[in-house]
Image (cartoon, rainbow, N blue to C red; front, top):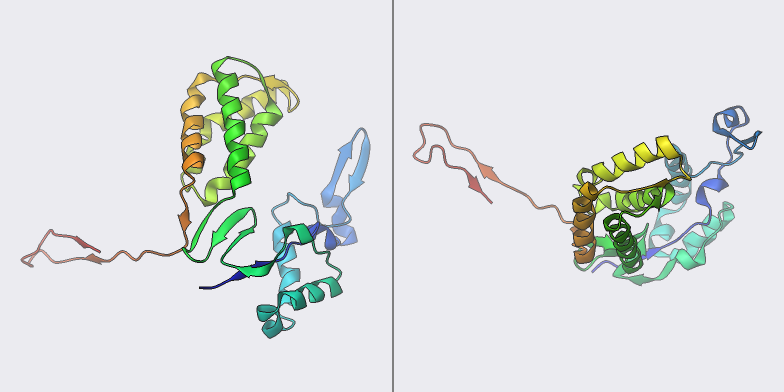
Amino acid sequence: MDRMTSLGLKSAFHHLTVFELHRAYQAFEVDGACYRYKATPFGTKHSPIFFTEAMIKIFTEDPVILKEQTLALMEILMQFGLTISMNKCELEPKQEIIFLGWTWNTITMEVFMTKDRRMDLLDMLKRLIKTTRQNKLNRVKYLTRIIEKLNFLRTQFKEASLYLMLLYQAQTRAAKEQGWNGMMKVTMQALPEIYWWMYRIFNNKRLSLRWSILLETLVTDASPRAGERLWN
């Protein structure tokens, strides 16, 4: 079976500087003062694109070495001024590693959420259910944090967005009325969504990376098997 290693970069996007004339588009205001990003910021949709374009030049430097020797790759990355985050690295070839917040298994060819993420989400959802049933207040930021964590799981649960609609509506309405630092109540109508997430996260059904091929046989009306569909 294939074995994997992984390398983690510290503040990866910040290694890329922004062109001087473009920094005005990354400005923000805090307490009456205006600030601009000199480096590529996190949280924008274009940052991963720019970073990937820069990394392609590094990865094509020596494809033979980069494929076979993880330590050699580390040296090349550091020569380009990138900082390695050792606590995020998996230097020993393994058949199951944690990468990009997911657990990857090359034996079964499956991906699933990590144990720490699973336990953290279950605790947060239990607390949300308790406060909702007791009609207590939650901070808007707390619900936003939960939604962001659940939205991350769309890779594993394809129908995830369908079970965030009521929580999204409650968050959006509360943010407009109370602000992001305000308090809010989650309605009882949202409980089925929360329980759906509890069930999915508790079971942690793994996402298969194998493509299943479906074959369908179509026949004409003149065929003795007209109207019959055969699936494989």
